[in-house]
Length: 120
Image (cartoon, rainbow, N blue to C red; front, side, top):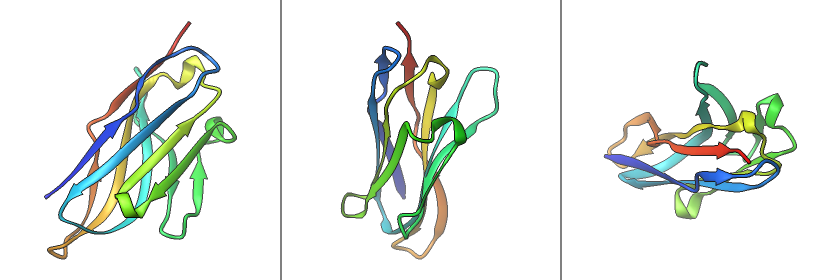
């Protein structure tokens, strides 16, 4: 059993910053690719950023230069540093990890979501 727990969301003014964290616990053997997604009201879930085992990163065009994804394998954690936030970044953010468990199962896991509101 693997659980992902997110933290770091909240209310911030335009131009502000937030750092989201997502920690995996339970039967984690190896973590592969990790990513962040977001749900904006009225839109389908949107991929935001991802990071591979080789630390190669990719970003949605609208967040390039403002968001940074990183990982700490020693803590089973992925981060999303969000700077220069805009009202259109308002969403519920979800982390996702592909994890090989100690029982040999390779599967995709999701966090519970953390709300980010950018408003003055």
